[in-house]
Image 1 (cartoon, rainbow, N blue to C red):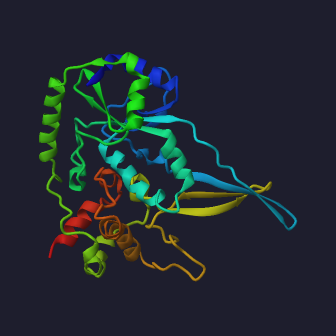
Image 2: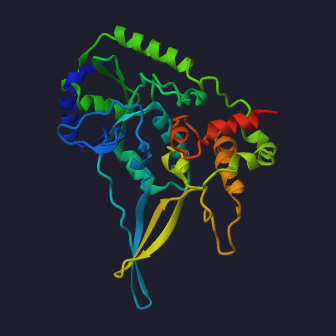
Image 3: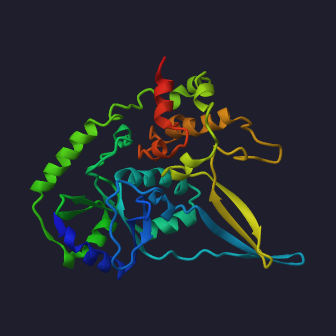
Length: 339
C-alpha cells in the first residue's frame, strides 16, 4: 500500500491544492473543528469529527437556483448554473462518507437534482479511518466499519505514516495525482492499529445498539406508539439535530426581491420547525409531537421502507452531543423497542 510520512502532510496538501481546491478539517479557536479551504501552513485537525458534516459540500445550507428579471409583464428567466470546480474534501470519516450514499438516493434518483450532481461529479472524497472513536459513536449499528471507510479514496494512519487505498476510479486518479510523493509501505503496524480500534469499537456504550426492531413493515405500530408524547415533551423544536445531521435533506425554496430582480434560492429546512411543510391551508403537523415523530419515523421507518432497508442514520453521534435537552435517536430507538 502506498504511504506518506505524517511529517510530509504539508507537502501532500500543497501538491493537491496546486491542482484543485482542497478542504481539510481544521481546528477553530474554541477547539472544535470545521472544514476550511486549505492554505499553506494549515494543520489537519486531530478531532474525531467536524461540528458540521461534509454534506455541506454537495448540499449547501443555502444555494441560489435561478434569477428572474421583470420588466412590466415580461419575465426573463436567468439560468445561473455553472460547472463546479474540481475539489477534494480530505479527512472525511466513515459515518459521513456513508451519508453520501443516502443523499445520493434522494438527489440522484429521477428526476436528478442537477445542482447536487454537479458537485458530486466534481468532488473527490478522501476519507480517514478512525483510530479514536468516541463514546457517542454508533456507526456500527448501520453496518459501517470505522476502520475501513468508503469514499473515493481511503486513508489509514499508523501514527507515523498515512496509507492510501483507492475505492474507485476517481480515488485512483487522486492517488495518481500525488504518486510522486508516495512510497510503498509495510502495513504491519497499521494492522495492529486497526485491530486495536476494532476492539475499542466493540466496547463502546452503544456497540450493542440494534436496528432489528425497526423497518417499514412496522410503520403503523410505531406511528401509533404511546411513547411519542413522553419522548417529545421537552423538545424545544430548535432544529439543531437536523442541522448537524449528515443525512437530513429537507429544504425550503424561497424568492428574494433584491430591488433589481428576483433570486430564487433554497435553504435547509427542519421537520422540527412549526412552519415545516406549511401550505396555503395551514400546517399538516400542528404539534411538536407530530413533528418530533416525523423526524425519527423518517430515519427509522419511512426511509428504509423505500430504500431496501437502508436507514436514514449513520451513527455519527452529533445529535447526541449537540441536543440542548439531550434527546436523540438512540433514546428514541431504545424507548420504542421496549414492549
